Every structure is written in C-alpha cells, then in structure tokens.
Length: 267
Image 1: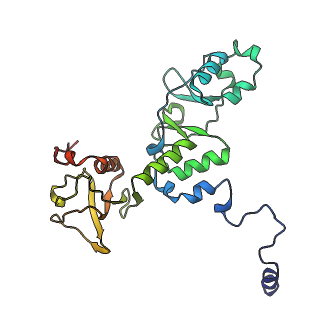
Image 2: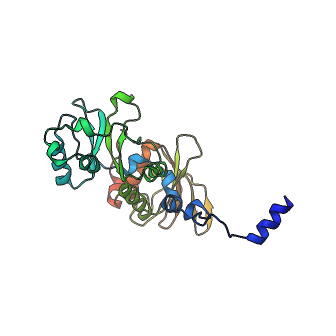
Image 3: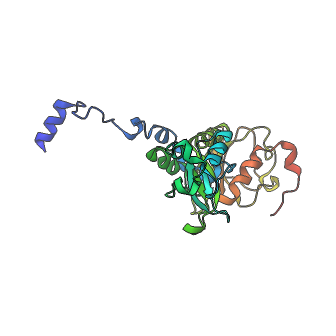
C-alpha cells in the first residue's frame, strides 16, 4: 500500500493508457447522457414519434428501397399482415445486395430479425445508452405488454427525438423528480402569469385528477399550502402526480387563463 501511494504521488495523472478519459462524462459515447441527467426522469413514450412508414416481408427489395428513399429515412420496421413486428430493413441492408437482384428478392430475405427495440415506459437515458452502444440512430418502440411473437410497434425513437424531448422540457421550465410514493413523480415549475391557477385558491384551481400541490416557495419562504392558499405568479410550485396524470398536468399548466374557468372532465 505504501509503494502504491508513493507511485501515485510521483506519477500523478500521467498514464500509459493515453486514450483513457478521466470520467464517463468525458467519453464521447456517454457525453450527452452524462450531461443531461433530466433524461433519467423522462420516458420513451414522452419522446417517441409516430410510425409513418413500415414495410411488409413480401415486398420486393427494390420497392422497399424506393419507399425509404421517398421518405428520406434510413430504415423502417417490417410488419406482418397482422401488424406484428417481424424485423427492420435499412438502407445498409439493401446496399449489401447487388442492384440486379433487388427486383426479384423480398424484404424477408435480407431484413434484420434480431431487432433492438424499447418499451414506452423505459427512461430516455437507458434508450440513449442502447442507441449509442449499438451505433444506431433509431429503433422501434413496442408494446411492453405484448408477447415476443405479437409485438406491435407504437412508434419510432431516434436520437433526435430524445434531444427534442429534452429541450422541450427545459423550455417549459419544468423539473421532474421521482415521487415520494412509488408509482408517482414530482414536478416543480415556476408559475407564469398566464397559467390558469394564478390568483385562485387551490380549492378552486381545478387541477387535473391524480394531482396534488405539496409545497411552494415564495420569495425564499417554503409554504405548505392549504385549500385557501392562493397561487401567485413567480411561485415555485411542486406537484405530486401519477404517471397517467402527468401529461394532463403539463397541458393544464400550458393552457391559457381563459380555460381555467371551463369545467374539467372527470374522465
């Protein structure tokens, strides 16, 4: 131990491993993930895009190539007639086949059947890790409740979708944390003058279902609100909400003041 200590003092940060970075945050493969911890609180379902193009196993490779080119995408899911995921086909797969053979070959012959996919309830940092570790730019999002043979594609997730979701959340000045109770999350946001709960007692704020205001900070003072507490512009309010009610709360906070007096559906 003494020898190791002396050696460390003499050598310092010098090392024979010249390509080794100090931390994962310095690694190009992990820099984005480590620099945006917010990704660990956002789900794939909040970022995924709708599936606008899919292929069938029976299509010719040339027809599939044309569709991918028209859509300006690098690949697409391959679905059975019943709508189940059977594989993916990319431009790279097509380029491996000579052009003269593409007209008489089917998608099923060259598609990738070992598909990397993600579920909508997984976190974006895990999804980003999957994408970067496999050096791919997109993957399908499948129903987490379906069996392996009957997976339905719910959408597509790309690296661009992840970055867009991150930036969109930042622009809302909304901070999402893990909830105190299992199965809940906490959202903290600065109240803007146009938000519908401004100037109303909490009992009259008509918050969405499964949503509770647990605390607020006003001019440096922490307040535990009651039904009579009036929310003011500039307050930092923390909400406890279920995952199902999170989207409704974000919509509510983004709605105009005029909508605050409209009846809220109990559905």
